[in-house]
Length: 284
Image (tube, rainbow, N blue to C red; front, side, top):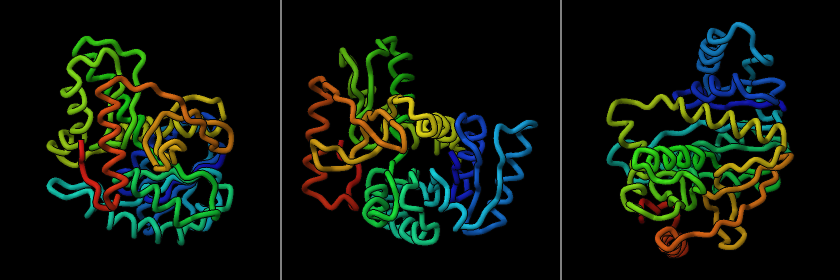
């Protein structure tokens, strides 16, 4: 699979590093609005490996759009004190322009990283329409890792567990028994803000988990990932566990929710249906 990363700022550069260890990639293409930024990410990447698994190239936007999987990492993160609605407005408009610049081929898998990822992914999906293949929002796998950590430090069972809802501020942890549920949920929803208290996040975890997703897309092994995609039962885009099949096909995993998680999901669904999702902030 030929994979491209468009956008090589703080997130994009970390994603390139994470993808260097992904199996199933035939070529990695790096592109950005500013070619000098893409070249810097390339030079940094080739400095970290003596024998890369595949060719790495700096390309223009057109060549980036010809890849089989395109990671759109352009966009700003949610700064301290800013609303999700403000960041949504900025990133939605930016991603519309990026989609028109990159112009994915009609069978390309598009992976969206920008915040708030569930809402921005829906914008990209609607904007591209039939001009691209599956559009997937990335972030739920990070919440899953954070859930495992929160349960482990409390010495609570780590299986079976998952994440539903939305990535980040409205993530809903699914675990049983739901002991200390409110604190576990708070751990996940405030994880990134606590990282940013120490300075600008480096997104190293994002790169590592993105590599796992790209491997699954390349190999079609049917592994489960927690991503943002349309949920057939609710008629809304949600972060949910899906089995990743060949060519980016997603098969929703049926998930039984215990009472507290089910209650949070009902609140989130109700809020998304009543409110303009562009203005949807933390509701849980």
